[in-house]
Length: 524
Image (cartoon, rainbow, N blue to C red; front, side, top):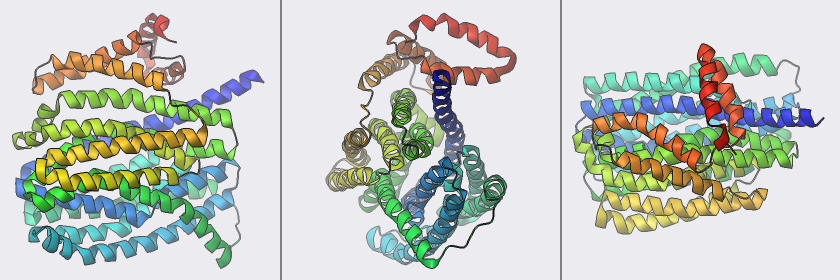
């Protein structure tokens, strides 16, 4: 019996780790694609037009979040809960009812965005060239919400690869169409139109995957048609969960993009372009937190549904640890090589954003921890805590942005964001502890931070150039791993994931095992 319980526990850990790794690897690929997208646009658009594109992006992100209304995470949560207790009828009904709601919200969001485009572009920014890109943003909403609902279903069934497939199609068509339209003269509007087509094509592939892997696989029985009253009650259940989530999402987007909005109001558009790219690179480590959080939400919901406290503690502890072990070194490397990274990716003109990027990197480390904590709270059925934290942080961000952007420019916007992220992180980690009684692994965080500092010191000795970046690709993993060994940060639980990964290396696996055995004495 003990052996069976242990095996089950290890399988649960593996499930969380596997889902996180799948999303993580995919996110890395798509983030690279995103940088390729920006890399191409920054070279085929002049700095002014690229800045206009950068000003439209916050509204695209904002509309995508608000139109979805926090419903995709709700779908993931309740599908995971009902699936855990073999209630396929309710899993199916959650998806149907939530999809009806999300389509209605997408249409409403599109109409509102179209109406406010002119007051923002002309009345606030005094930039007529931003009008058409903002109007085109409104077209994205109906497409993006449908994709969001389907991805929520995939997340609830731990079908992370299907999420990646739909994102791949979206990104490929976004880049291709945007580049073609920009080259034929559409400028910033062409870049936005690429996203419209990307989401449209993503709907096609996502629905095909949904039919194959969800509808035809799980919903094979005969189901009764629920009454209008029952559906309204179900809508209320979804909304109770999703409203705090969407407010949280709005506040997250505000944290990322408030600086850009204020920059658009007080500086020329090229500064918006500098800040947009600096922010994009600084947020790169957040794909770690998002990947872990994507698996953590249904995992926490499953543990809650099964009333398994020990499993819940395991999920929470491992979620924090996997996130921190990866986000710290990535952020440290980005901090050290801020200037050459911006120059390499976007051109020498964009190096002007390097100091803002360094400040943002520090803020995004903290915000990455918040993302994980927020997802855990949502999975535990407590989405209001992160929502309150983000509202407080957003208010702080607005207040500081009003003061600092006009005084310090894009560095002031970055500092406002970093301070707000620190406040949000502290509040949300405390709330996760309050809801779960799981103490954050502070001692482990300190050891991992020391390992990262050791790596950063070594990287700072390399040249600040493209050559330095290339050398860092080899130096950073070695020095960080040595730091982890010295600080005894590697634990036995990591071997479960490690063995699963190297078993897929085929003939090379035996050699990797030999190397790993040499370091066993350092493992706790």
